Length: 300
Image (cartoon, rainbow, N blue to C red; front, side, top):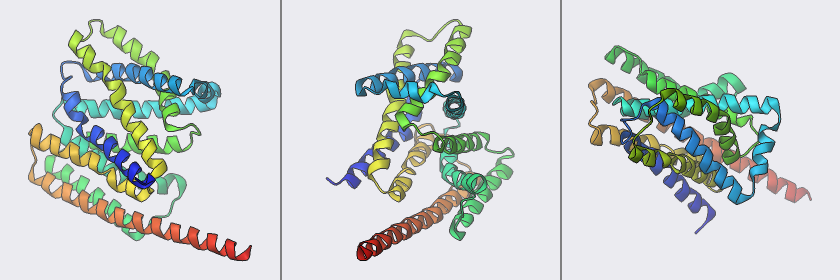
């Protein structure tokens, strides 16, 4: 099996875990979202630290947190991913998993727009059209339901900003996420202590699974990103919100209104346009790189 196929397989595995995770968090509705987040943070710290210890890379964690400026950036990125985790758990606990899936559909387009605003990245006309369609879909949903899809926007914005912050961190994904949960752990401990009475014993058993449930797809994603084409990784990642969508509608039986019937197809068309543009840009970049390599070989 080629590296590319292994990467695609790893990405599919990551998306299956992410996409079906609402089923897991639905089992924990007896625990408040804040508590679930706190325990998820602590168990993620334990699991990630164990992975780094087995790899003999705990020194990388000390290195990542050694510089105050870098530690501040890691804390900031941790607060954004923590907010994202909380928003998702809150959505599942409050019968709004459909809104959460919309957020992860909107996220790639939000990330593209932030890249344009923050880094001045140029957008192709198809990408502008995709962003415009997504904005129209959110507007239609807001007008139809009488309230903006706040959870969708929270998840899209926090994950997009988190991605931008991660670009500035030199550490790898496992090291940086471990550093983030290290800095968030004191907040988690205080939250659990302030709550007083804790979850039932069987709920603690489920909460312990949140560590590997958080770590495994991130490790698979990191593996995929190194081996599969980026355009392929980008396309496969839509499996995540698609699975969340079907879980919300078919298993949780959340209402799917006429306005959802207008907004979701518009988002899907926007993502299709964006994906076509991204694949075209990827091919163009690879052709340019190949041409440049050929020219250098001819010169030498």
